[in-house]
Image (cartoon, rainbow over all chains, first blue to last red; front, side, top):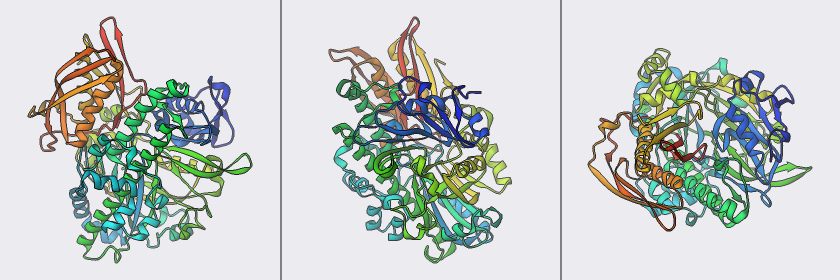
Length: 485
Length: 143
């Protein structure tokens, strides 16, 4: 039992640590969770979300989403809005895997059509999308080409024939954060990343074939608007980020911020992983630009992978991606900081929103959404564990308090170390196949770490986001095939 | 084994403690602990490639941070699995220097049992300190 005695219940799904909980807290910390989820949260969540509340310039509350768990700096699931004029930017509020995110792609195929070819599809995806530790991609680039990729994101992919205009429309920020300047990234970051465009990576990164069963459609109208129109429709969901490039950008600036934070700006922090700099300082602006480069690399990475997925389906079903209805539902980013306009103290204000392991979830009518989602709200893609399933949800107008943010996954309850001791990857693979989920992986150890029982119950997490008014359930998607790094 | 993984100080990440009599030994142990997260059978990594290494930092703690990050860098940039072959840490006017060589080979999934990618060394609970027996480090890796 790690719940602090000071934790106050505000509503059925909102819990608060007051500013008196820890010295230096500037705002209270709020956690969205049901009774059950709050009891399951590890001690790190309470420690870290209250640490976030001490950061200069933080507005309203330091938040943690229902899938929150122990991270570094911010908890995973942490959200904080900073006043850009007086506040800081912190790589620890974004994460090393900058713009790790989810993409959901439709097909017009049904499970009956896909199941006879499932092994072929999964095997071909596994062969064609590089996975695992240190994998290099199939797009061969020179370092200078890579600098163009990170400045242009999905727009670069469009020029190279890896994307359609519609893909860009269905990607957060059109697949390119403006203001990404490659002069803010190190040669080392480029050297580490230029060979990795079009790679999935490892850990919790995956590409999954899923089915939208009729009994799992929660909101038929929104499901239809999102493109789920056929019973037992097959969709493809994948999760990956900015690979070694983003990790190096974060490491470079973590070190820079540690060296200037106290000496130059007199900022004291309670955890070195919360290293930060004033947003408008030269260092803060350089990191913001470098982070945008990594955001764009991740958009381009997912776009190039989508191109490969389309090729595989096209080959195996002898039809064009258009004929197979392979349209994107949406692409959402997890680990970012963005300037957004939100309501604060009675007026609209520009705020720097840090989301770490959290998804932006704009409600209906929000500026920046494609017209087709104006009435539904933004599609939100929440990936569960590979054994249990995932969800498609929609942003809600009631999400304004949390700066239109919601959960990003199930959230771990068991450490990787413990999971590896508790499960065997090869047995898990066989068990999953017996249950109708065909998995390919480079690493049985890595597979064991991702066992469903190492995660919170995804159904409870998404229910909590809906009860808290953050995102509404549209459809539950069950896996039938998976490639894992 | 002069290092141990800990499930109690990180959930989504991998934490380890390492300890040794000398700083060089501790760097060796921390390198093995980091690489073992990615490769289960480290003994299968052949020393066919050699990379020279020279790092300077203001203190020993950040020198270890940079050193572990070099191993992670080569894994991505050149697909090299490297371990230290020779290391020497010395005091300099500006702080501390590490000079040495790393040895290993390119990832070969047919022979190397690959596990989980290490993305970065985090500052969470990060420490390197002198203890009566020598040196002790706590490291949390983002995976």
